[in-house]
Amino acid sequence: MPQIINSRCVLAVRDLAAATQFYMDVLGFQRDCGDGVDGWSFLSRNGFRLMLGECRDATPAGELGDHSWFVHLIVDDVDRLHDEVASRGAEILSQPQTRPWGLREFVLRTPDGHRIVFGEPVTANGNKE
Image (tube, rainbow, N blue to C red; front, side, top):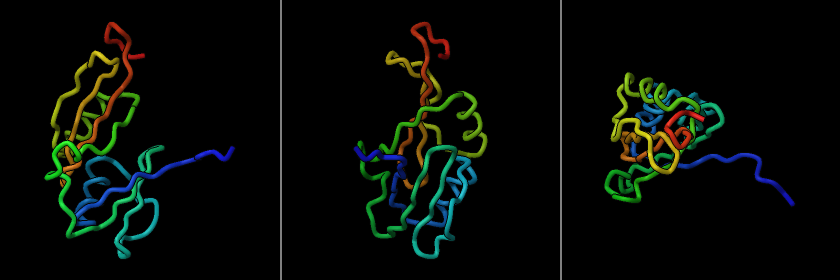
C-alpha cells in the first residue's frame, strides 16, 4: 500500500509578506524555497511544514470563530517554546497549563487570527513523559 511520507498544511493569509515575517521572526520557521512573488511561502520548523498562500479577499481567520483553529502541534518542551514565542511578541491566548487529557498546552493567535495549540505529553501526575 502506498504510504504518505510527508505533509504540508496550507493557510490562507491576507498579507503574505507580513504573515511570512511573523512565522519566521516570531515562531522560528525557516523559508524552504521561493521568495513569495508567486503568492506562496513554503516554510518549516523542524518536521512541521507549512504553505502560506496570499488571499487578500478571503475572510480573515479571526472572523471565523470556531473555524479559526488551525493545528495542534506536539512539541518536546512546551514551556520553553511558550517563553520563546512570547518573548518575540506572539499573542498568547492561554498560558501553559496541564490538561486532564494528558497534555500541557498553550494557545496563540497569528496576525491573521488562526489559533495554534502547542502541547507536550505529561504523565497522570503532571510530569513530562
